Every structure is written in C-alpha cells, then in structure tokens.
Length: 258
Image (cartoon, rainbow, N blue to C red):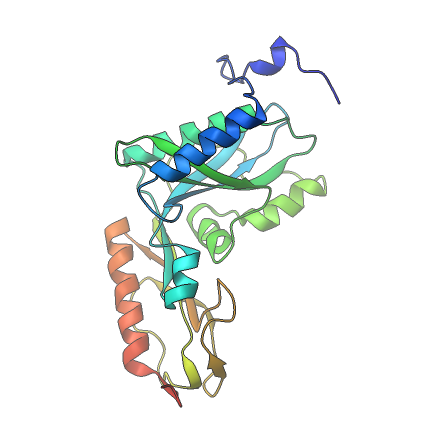
C-alpha cells in the first residue's frame, strides 16, 4: 500500500483534507450520528461524477427523497426524489459534505461515478450516511440525464473504457426542476389505464402492461409505473407527481385485490 504524504492531504483548492480518524472513532461517530438523525431514512442524495485522481468532483447535484426504502417495502408507498433548486442553501451544504467525504477516502486509481446519501439534522448539520461507487438506483440516472445531459451509469462505463467525458465541468443549474417517482404495484391483475397520462411534465419510463398479475412489491424499487417529472420549480414537480399518482389510482384497478 502506498504511504500517504503531506501532499496527499491537500485538495485541488489548496485546503487541507481531513485526516483519517481511527476505525473505532469513526464507528463511534457514525453510531452517534445515526442516533441523532431526525429522519429514519437518508433524506438527501448526491449523484455525481468523481473523475480525477486528485479527488476533484467534476459535476454533481443533490436531491431530496420523500421517504425511505424500508418504509416503502413495509407500507407499499410511492418513492420519489426531486433535485434541489440552485438557490437552495442545502445545495452548498451537501456538496461541501460530499467534498469532505471524498477527501477523507483513499484516492481512486481510475475515474468513477458515485452516489452519496446523507441526512440534515434539525440543527442544520449534515450527517454522512453512505457512499457507493456507482450511480444511484431507481430512476436517479435517468433524471440526471434529463437535467444535465449525462447518464451517470453510462458515464461511469465510458470513463472505465478510456473514453472522453461527456460533461467536464459543474453546470450552474439543471435544465429545469426534475424528479422521479415510483408508484407501487397492487395485488391481483392490473386493469387500465385506458389513456396516456395527461399530466404535463410527466414522462413515463416504465409501466406494467394491462393484465399483469402482481402480489405487491417484489423488490425495493419495483413499480407499477415509474416516471421522470419536470417543472419550473421543485414545488411544481411535487405537485405534478401528486397529479400522476391521482391519475393512476383513478384510472387503474387490481382485480382480485383484497
């Protein structure tokens, strides 16, 4: 293993990177953060591309979840996420946390895409939850592509193959407010919908065919219908998601559902 030196502890912007704590100390701090978090799920995610060996985050953008995967599996609820507005102060907070987490980790030999999740406590302090060397699941990559023109999963494969990057700098803002939503399947045989979704800004990405038989959720990101949604603001995206869910429930049924 390569020994770290002082130069390794300086980031691209000249600031010192945080020193490694002992594994036991990290475990104690992680447990304390978990206990003090105000939500039972990671409320925010940062989908990003870490594409230099120096640890520079080339581009990324935070989003906010509406709930947790465990809660979704337990209660068979919708799961959704919306990109934060450019002027949202949580943007800077979460990207700062992301930079600190990256600086504390060993340097990557190859460029990669990653997905980070975090909480923001009631006192405004961000708390790291987890990070993975992949793009986010569900419709994270599809939403990012519509917002920035880059599909994170494909970009990760591109750089591993030695190709040039599609996006080489941080955009000032997404093309529009964007989000995604997964509506869970019911129990029985799906009937409807007879017509396409009329809600503006909704793009159906996945939808079960009429006649499909299901017995509720088969896995955490399972969906009867999944869509990306755009609007002028995050609030408008949320409203359109609600309209999508209302349309689906009014125009479909599950024959045999108890």
